[in-house]
Image (tube, rainbow, N blue to C red):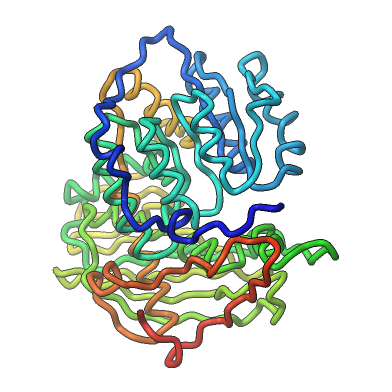
Length: 428
């Protein structure tokens, strides 16, 4: 709790992409034999982080967990026993390899790991990835990959550097590893519905994340970190942190072609005016994306308890219609409707199976640029909703808006910025 005076540029958005020494590093990752253990480190001991460790354990019998880290020491204590149960005899974490504080990611990576799982709030993802790539460590990191355009630009460069160093570099866009999704999107990309005219994308759900009150001893920074889902600088807002999955599927359907522009709206109807518990994010978005060929993507998302849920991608093409999420079906003109009927899989396990297998083969997977692009499309949606302006993708990508707070000091005040207001909030 006494991490004070951390420089915002050297921690979250370091000014140089890599150090000169790292630029000159001769390190190139080598493949692992089937018998060689892969030593895993975990940074971020929340539910997704612990789940990812379990997935990696199930994916490869030679995986071992050797180091863990989290900002808060109490989270380390809470999760250690749980992780030990998940890993069984492959839990090799000593007391010396349990780290807390803002610099815990460096200590985990420096503990001798081969493969690091990064599942902290996404505000810290670019800095954590930078250090891992500099050290030549294979990375599995959760989506989204950043919360603002400077972070996205950095991750794109890191993905390219990871490729040069032959490092595994995989994001947690889990639907890309789901067998039904792969089959339905392969058919769409093969022309099953013809040229795409429009897509209907939803991620309508209830409130996500805890909304705990402030204990007497909690500082501004601590309560924001404890309620990170509700704070723009930490989560990127709900469209970036959660609904990005649906936006990623639109990108998939479009063959990774980026939209040329977007406009839309959003707001805060349900979350009360309580910055400690509910931060400064929106609880709903409605965005229209446009591609160069005239196709439109209509995205709707919300986090409002007691409302109709919906998590779908419907694709409308010149030859037919596709349900790419729940029904996995394609109805094309004059043809028998197709529906996925083969086996399903645990996509979270498959992610790690495929990444680890690729590392062992010496040809590791790297989806970093794709993940950065999908995250940027979601950030672009947030930007147009906040400002009420139409923006091009290039405008959004080149934005200078840096969401990093003025300090990361538990001993200083850190007021929560006001909720953005369309027409008043400026594009930066």
